[in-house]
Image (cartoon, rainbow, N blue to C red; front, side):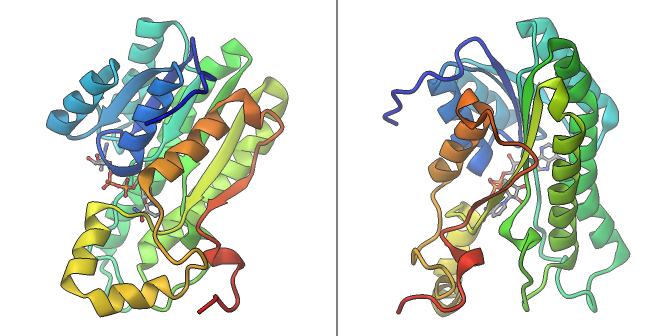
Length: 258
Ligand code: NAD
């Protein structure tokens, strides 16, 4: 990665779900910009590997467990002396979450816990450190499905991301005068192992999805990481409570170019 910017020197950055996908790409990017990165993930094997790659710290965390989350920030503060950036990004999109007609209550609750309640815990326990510092940047991962509806539904996932978006907006407003910014990152579809599997298994169906993306392709995780680095840094100092769409134009399109 060719990154010249060093916007995050002297700052700590906690990344939930930092062992894979968007979180891992962001760990690399924030470390390259000088941040001390804390990888918070439920998977110790990939989490340790990611942390050592970026010379950071690994903390095994289940983001649905409030004790885990509380001690994540305490450990970060003990190790680094501040909690400057919180990228609350861990999320799941399991196959048993689909149409409301077929999705059972257990599948619904699981997705709400991992995608939405986790962000409530992460913000709740990161904010007091940021209040004491008088500064901080929180970035919560929502999705483009927080602002658009899909006919091929994942009902709990979409509802959870809508929740992340409005929670982020409200926190951004509430804590603005304390020097804390809170923004929601809304990625469009990203080129991850899951998506590549779909392409391999059903190229026609995958191609159909691409029709909706004006830029004509899926995002690379590094493109989301670049957006997070911007939101984490002082370059975005006048941005808070925003719906930060990085979606290849999907949400702006009525008809896409052929
Ligand atoms: P990923 O599956 O590659 O990585 C998710 C990480 O979260 C994994 O390392 C996993 O171990 C960790 N994790 C899962 N449950 C956890 C828990 N309970 N506690 C702690 N860690 C846990 O995912 P990704 O594609 O990089 O997605 C990251 C975020 O971006 C998610 O919130 C997802 O909903 C969102 N998003 C993804 C896309 C996409 O196309 N990939 C699009 C829009 C939004």
